[in-house]
Amino acid sequence: MTVLPEVTKAKLNAAVMALAKLDRPAAVAILARFDALNTVKLKPELWQAVFEACEEARAKIAGTP
Image 1 (tube, rainbow, N blue to C red):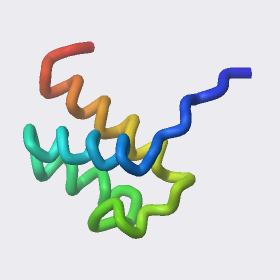
Image 2: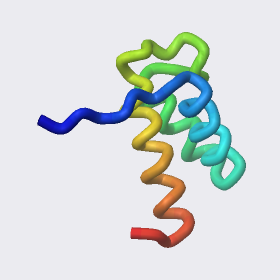
Image 3: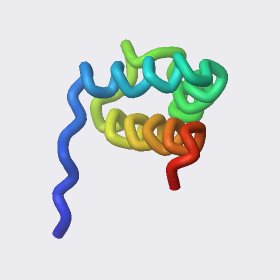
């Protein structure tokens, strides 16, 4: 069984902000996919998924597979 590292609110916010600096519409689209305008009211059980989506989008922008 694989245990994923728990994403803290600070780490989540940092990932969203880093993506927003590169591509704000992409960050907004990811949050919208999870029915959120920002991370304030995002449920903790969604933090990992949003974090991963932001990291994936940043990697695509940077050209990293």
